[in-house]
Image (cartoon, rainbow, N blue to C red):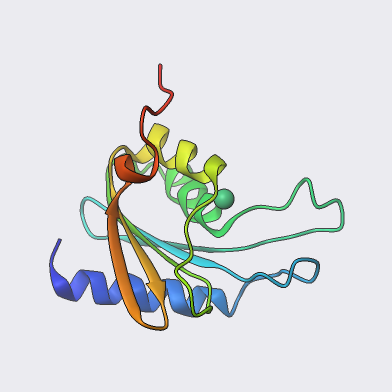
Length: 128
Ligand code: ZN
């Protein structure tokens, strides 16, 4: 993926952090998923009082894209405004694997970005 697209999705993920609704955990995350054709879908943490129905930023971005008919993806940037890199939870790794395949994950931290293939973060993935 081109450097300018990486910068763009990192910027979009960081912007999405500010839209997070996380009054319970106060852990705010943002994600930006880019399709094969370069369209970007963003997501942010959305918590509610049941907690069980809370949704991760990665899940929101993926769900938005899938609901618009998107099927092929290049990468996702994930930001959470913390010093450390923000890794996706296990559920999101599985969701991304199933619907986006072995995309690149760009993790954003204050020291810069780190890039992984999803398969590095989900070895021996469960799939049909
Ligand atoms: Zn998650």
